[in-house]
Image 1: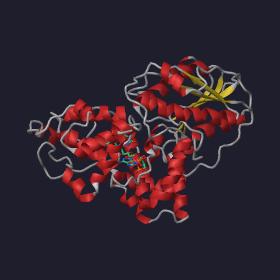
Image 2: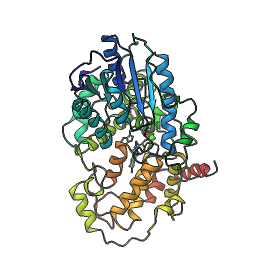
Image 3: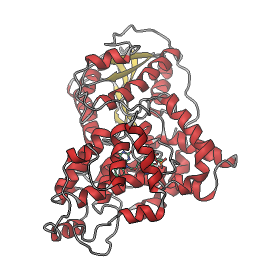
Image 4: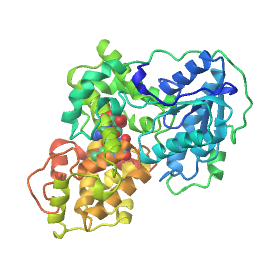
Length: 461
Ligand SMILES: Cc1cc2nc3c(=O)[nH]c(=O)nc-3n(C[C@H](O)[C@H](O)[C@H](O)COP(=O)(O)OP(=O)(O)OC[C@H]3O[C@@H](n4cnc5c(N)ncnc54)[C@H](O)[C@@H]3O)c2cc1C
């Protein structure tokens, strides 16, 4: 593993500790998990067993049944793998940072995986502060395993756009193709630490969790590494070589990996390695290969750069550029020909069949094609009384209904609609210099009726 993935936050070692503790939070997987790898190496070095802890809080910001089900499907697999690999898995129903703190006393070492969003950082800081406060002697390391290249390694500032980030990451990423195999754990001691649920019956667990149950699980997408891996194999075999045409929402040529990446159920580095292998085997060529690498490596990393360095990434007042605020202000009072509410959107009741189809994809399946996400957000901007209301509506719908919502990519994608990482365009009503999109563009470029017909099928499911 490239050493630059690891931040040694607290030097030390607890000689009377009985395990190496890995707090799994962001990277909910076994495969290509550098944090787990680091924990195993430490455990083997000191002849200790590994404890993997996962804390599930019913009050995770903006999460609902759709998200919990997807996540638990993945965690059930994780548990099975860990048992098979002779590691201890502790699954508790509590706020994760509080749960970890309880396990620190008996740990020789703590390994955490890195999470880029604000609340994830606060949780980790709380754990470190508590270890210092209690004068615990254990060492604490933080391992970035969800980015191909850790954000702080690529850049120490907010990047203007893909064009400034691209050369930096292109120089670096080969040094971070650094995962070989997970070593075996030498010490197999079963510590018999209690869990609050065995994860065998997820439905039963979901039933009793006091979570928002208004948004139903996706009938199409299911969580877990196995699903992700199979979906990606199908993508490589049947779609990847046509990825250069994937902008067309009717064609279904994208990989659907965003939801698995969001929950850390698959690693972006594994996807990149598999893509390179496919290229070497002639399964994916030229523009399609470059196009996928651009999204996975450059655009995704740009989103994480954004949430790292733009402190107010999730607030209307602080998420975009000064020129964008100026132009929005200048057009605040422009006449809006249509005004819709969130309820209109959710009932698929606008005058625009393409927008309604996109809403169906979102509400009924938990996913939406990238091109339609842009169109969808731009329409909400056009049909809201002002830009702040539009921002709040987009953010709420995005994070409630998308399985991949509440991600760095959510905030960056939405901010892009409001000018972030984009440029000024020709001035027009409502949008000012922000990029505009219209239905004619969809009709001109794609067989958009096919997309509408496809989404109509979902209403019958
Ligand atoms: C208004 C708006 C809201 C969005 N909300 C989210 C969200 O909540 N969660 C989310 O993960 N993405 C979001 N995106 C980004 C993008 O639409 C999705 O990541 C993409 O559609 C996921 O589909 P896929 O995995 O099939 O993509 P593929 O085309 O197969 O791409 C592979 C991977 O590359 C990355 N990627 C693809 N497109 C983009 C992009 N435009 N920006 C950054 N990374 C990208 C993703 O990690 C994706 O999984 C949003 C974009 C916009 C414009």
